[in-house]
Image (tube, rainbow, N blue to C red; front, side):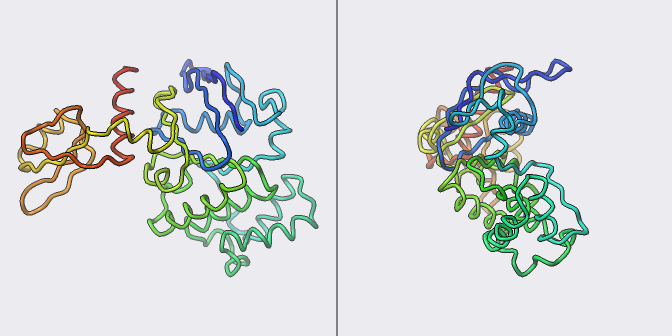
Length: 292
């Protein structure tokens, strides 16, 4: 279990990136959702011992993460948002280098690297320079380096940003496979990534924890609050000013608008089943109003 208790982080310029966040995260896939700038990366860096919280406690099992960062690092895998590679090295050379940095002995590293290249489906490209890899292949190398020490806690920060749809689906599948035997934290602003993988979800906004629950419980927050409505294109700007719009689609009969509202927005609006995207939009919008 990973436990965060009243974790706050204030930067030297006075910016409060996290405000008393409390979470208990069990084994499996945990999704951390929030808009850009919500505090997700700060939270991940605090857990990964790259930053120290201004206030609060973090524990992983019997490890006091703040007091014993080196102990956590021995069982931690981390793929940061700005993960970089040495372009001239091939995948094997890069992973050998990272294994040495992590203190994995050369003999153990050789066998582990072979296993990981199989796991991330890069065996055929293992001797090609990493600089020539696609975005998805580079991310898979990133996951391989994060798994070199067989971590019990794996953190991935915005891992699918910039990937094409096929690579995104493949990467999500890989994370799901990995989550069976460890805690995997997926931090992202892309709702579909979390919807497809996470067994529990937290939403944060402006450093505050908006909600933390099972996906189906989060969906209940917008049950009976999602509507479709066909409007004229000329009316759309005014409707966007008045209502919370989840999506729009232009059709021959007008613009099909998906609205999240507590009450039916118009006599012609029809109720539809909610999605996690609807719930995320509704809850972050509510929090935005509450937080100013």
